[in-house]
Amino acid sequence: MRSDGRKNNELRNITIEPNYLMHPHGSVLISYGNTKVICSCFAENRVPQFLVNSGTGWITSEYSLLPGSTTDRSKREASTGKVTGRTHEIQRLIGRSLRTVVDLKQIGERTLWIDCDVIQADGGTRTAAITGSFVAMALALKHLKKNGDIKNIPLIDYVAAVSLGIKNGDVYLDLNYEEDFSGDVDMNIVMTGSGEFIEIQGTGEKKGFSQDNFLAMLELGKAGIHEIISLQKEIVTSFVPELTL
Image (cartoon, rainbow, N blue to C red; front, side, top):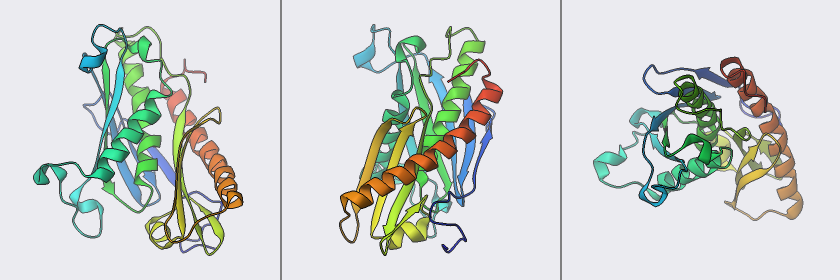
């Protein structure tokens, strides 16, 4: 039994509150336990220079930890004048994950801007951001279709993410901060609803891990993501009933 009472193979309580903000084309507040992230999506009628006159759209992301999200105040990166390597890595991960499940030609020469603001961090902020961003994006695409900007909802599949770890030889699903900090191994997995892997980030923080450990984390991660995508589907299909993925 873990510090929060969960079994090794149990997710934290995950909630997704749709249309959390009034101005973005799509938004959610997503919670993975005590980790809370606001994910929003705006559509902009232009694309990066390398896609001009291509007829293809783009999806990109910005991610930030708000000052009050951590035990010690997190500096706003705008005040330092640069984006940290960690932030840059997470932003690219979110963008890659979402682009994998969208037919970009169907959105035309538009950019979907995904903003992920962590208002409370307790481990798994990047995985929560990916899962929440997918729902925010689906709501934004519904908005574009309703306005006649696109003909169809161009989603190919669902996508979600979860963290895993190993401590004292045991594999854990969906790590909170204490488990992430004290564990021997941590991993983040991004997968589609059809069971394909988009990204696997595995790191031996204090020791290496065997192939058997690796496979055990993959299997547990797949089961966890299956649960998370079931929650996504409940929300998305209630707002976008024409989506039948």
